[in-house]
Length: 241
Image (tube, rainbow, N blue to C red; front, top):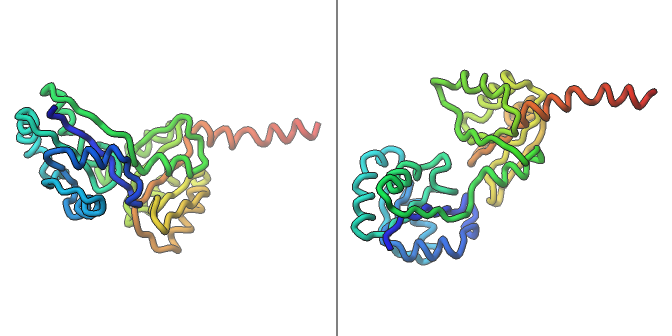
């Protein structure tokens, strides 16, 4: 049956893909890839030989209608991105919505995504969290940062290595430099790194260190931050009495 599949791919280590994902990629008629060169490396590794077509933020608005018609005509299509789950800060949302609106069956496979291991590695509260993805680069950035001062849940951001220090600095200025955070870099790869500390400490660390690779920033929410600030003095006084 014709269908759209959203297929997660490894965020670094090529072993982090499910058996089902490999099977689906071998069975579909067409694979849509954010970057055909990167996806070709994965496909070659698992001996997958299927037609591959570029599908990214620069062309997805123009190609969605044609792709929907191809699925309607009987084809099965898989969407993959450079790393992780399609639609999570990556292409995938537009075509999935268009297919659903057209009555086409859409199936999203479970699999790799960067923010879950980063959240768990952070050692910050993970029972409730807010995934923010990439902050606006220009318009709306300061407004969004100001809104986050009231966010009670642990916050998760994606960032490029080139803007890491700038973003950490802006978070410190807005949320407080003593707010606890963790920067995860190159998750699942040989040089994976998880650096924990206050925003002030992280700024100091990355001002002295060259930064490469994919970045996830996890920052504690206002509730746990305020609880930490306000609980210690009263507890100490009670102990002395």
